[in-house]
Amino acid sequence: MALDPETTQLALGDGLSLIRGDSLADAPPEAVWGDGEEPNVLALLVVDQERSGRPPVSIARSRFRRILTALRLFERGGYAVGPVAWARTEAGAWRAVSIGANGRPRLRTMVPASRRTS
Image: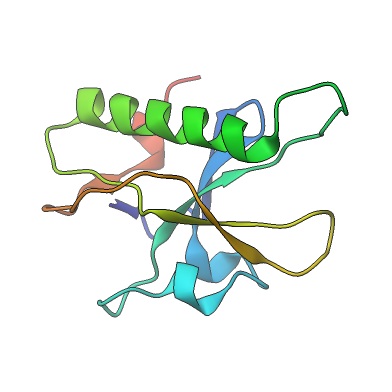
């Protein structure tokens, strides 16, 4: 999928957004760049963790599955989330974490900012 050229980040609410990979300055290159010349669109989740709350990776798995469901309802296509996500605490180093997702994207879908719902 791709965001329209004027959109670098599309807020979805509750700390979740879609963002052009190259606009996240310190993102791991493996997350930003795929097989094509365009940067990947990343699902970015910012979580304020409480000790008694669910682990952030668990929250991310659930929220990313919801993104896939929403995309499939938005427009027909072959959407997928990769098996690896990148996580960090505060401004620490990025680390790869398994999110257990898989699939193969088949078509490219442009998400224009004007189609966003509030």
